[in-house]
Length: 234
Image 1 (cartoon, one colour):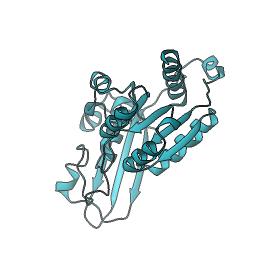
Image 2 (tube, rainbow, N blue to C red; image 1 turned 90 degrees about the vertical axis):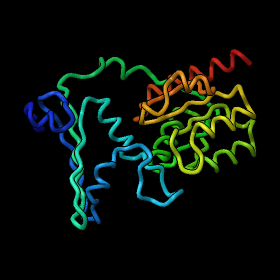
Image 3 (cartoon, rainbow, N blue to C red; image 1 turned 60 degrees about the horizontal axis):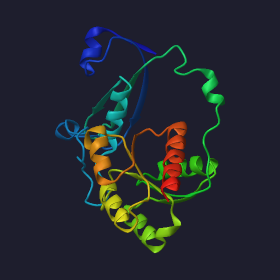
Image 4 (cartoon, rainbow, N blue to C red; image 1 turned 45 degrees about the horizontal axis):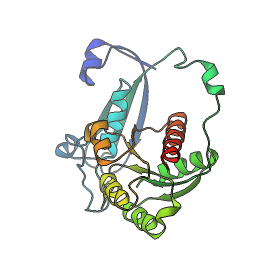
């Protein structure tokens, strides 16, 4: 734990003074030049070649930290590595009644297509959804996901896709899928709320917009609700 005084908290982005949990990650890599460091939180800014990444990683992290009333600071110099510090406000009391944890998650057996270009997130999501009873097909490529869907469009009952991915965004993937199956429910996941509003998502045909990080209870309830709604309309 660290205690931030008013001056320090203001320098970190005008967060509230108080007690915070600090997470620090460092490496001994190439580091970043000042002009790169100034832009690391900009959406779509990347030093990678086209097709190798979306430039959304740190922008997403920044958005998640800010939503939790925290701050993130990066210190880096060329040839000296990088240090990332994340500050999250300490919470002393439970955030929810203990009884809530005893309520079983809604389950199902339907076939879900899950798409995200982060392989670690895909692995965790597959494990989570399979524990809820669902059959899960995963793709780390939006183009691969579209190919899998077009090969067997009637095999899938629900789509969960990330918003920002190389080559084809989640929005474009959704549009292509809905051309073939307008009734299939689509859940869009993103860590950067400024890129897509719930109203814009619904106008495209997306049934639900979920902010990262994904919580098991939230996604379980959302999946079950959308599938039940679709079954009632069938």
